[in-house]
Image 1: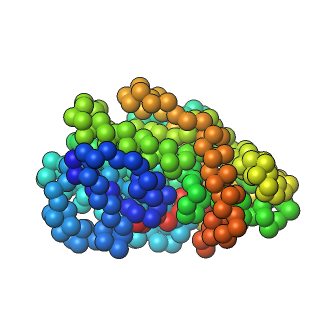
Image 2: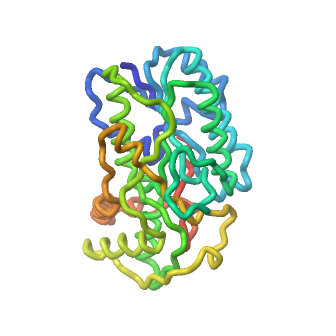
Image 3: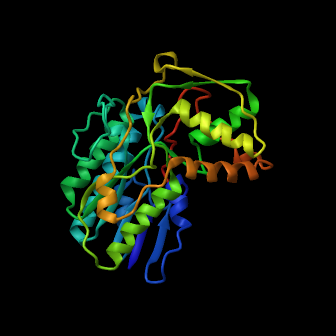
Length: 319
C-alpha cells in the first residue's frame, strides 16, 4: 500500500510519523510547505504524481480564537481544501481518513454526542470543520471522518504544556470548571488511525462514515489541570493553587461548547479497540515533558496561547 499522510508538524501528524508501519505500507508524509490545503490547484499536481492507495488528512487550521478574525483562512484550509481533496479521491477511487473535532457541536446536550447528532457549531473554527465534513461526505463514499477532542501531546501548543509552563511561573492559576470533555492524547489518535490503515491495507471490510475517538473518562478543564499538575509535582514540578472559575469569568473571542463529550461506542465495536484512560496518557506525557524540562522549548508553548482559563487547546496545525 502507498499511504499519503497530509500534515507533518502538528500534534497528530508528528505521532503518525513515529508509528512503526509494516514494510507493506509505504508512507509519504508531506507538510504545508509541500502540500498546502489552502491551494488545491497546487496539491492536485502532487496528488497526480502518486499512485496513492489511501490518504490521511492530518492537516488543519486549528487556532480557535484566531479563526474569528481569520475566517477566510480557516475555511480555505478546513473546508475548501478537504473538499478538493475528497473530489480527487473520488475521481481516483482512493479512500480518505479525515480528522475532525468536537467543536462541530454546540455543547447544549446533557449527554455525550453520538455521530448522528446534528452539528451546530458556535464558532468559526467549528463551522469551518463542520462544512469540511459535509464536503467530504458529499464527494466521497469511501471516507472515514474521525472526530476527537481536547488534543494534547509532548509537541506543539496544547493545554498540558501551557499548564506546566504557567505552574513554573505563578502561584495561582484560574481554570474554567464548567466545560466538560474528554482529553485525548495525540499518540492515541495516531494509534487509532494506524488501526484503520492496517485494516484497509489488509483488504478487511470497513464501515465507511463518521466515528468518535477520545481518551476514556470525562473531566473539566479544572479537573484536567488539577490532575496534570499533581502529576508533575511527583516528578519535581511546582503545583500552585488552582482556582476554579466559570466560562463567563474567562471570555474568549470564540465561544466554547460547555459539553464536548463524544460517545465512542461505535469506534470500540467496529475496531475492537478499547479507549485508553486519559489519566494514563497524561501521566506519560507529563513525565516526558518534566524529564525534558532542562530544555526550555520542551515546556514553553508558542505565542498565542491564552494564559489562564481554557488555553488554546486546538493550536494552529496547518502542516
